[in-house]
Amino acid sequence: MKITTDKVNSNLVREVEEVSGQKVSACFQCGKCSGGCPVVLTMDVLPHQVLRYAQLGLVDELLHCKTLWICASCQTCDSRCPRNVDIPKVIEALRLLVLRNKGGNYLHPNDLSEKVRRNAPQQGLVSAFRKFAK
Image (tube, rainbow, N blue to C red):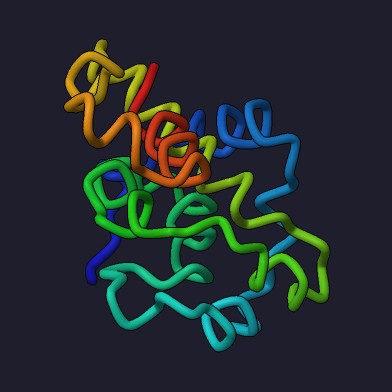
């Protein structure tokens, strides 16, 4: 990918760090997070790349990638990080920024059928609403 200065948003790092409480710039791209991620094969941007894109302020690339919604927040990457960056918190912050930019909710409890609300695992419902609710 060719990175040009017109794509760089220096405010992104500040916003992500403010929302997540994590120091995005601490990542030095060792790749241990990506190496241990159980869902990495389905991601279009690997976990360490998410941090690098954030460091570079590549807003469009981040806010339109599928990885933000695929991350299961299992904490495997967090446990492997030698710099103690909680990547799921960073990804959650990016999700929130996407939702703020879109200005609306993706999923409302009333959008689910009664059968789903009654039978779906509670953890799955909570995860969905954390990802898709404003």
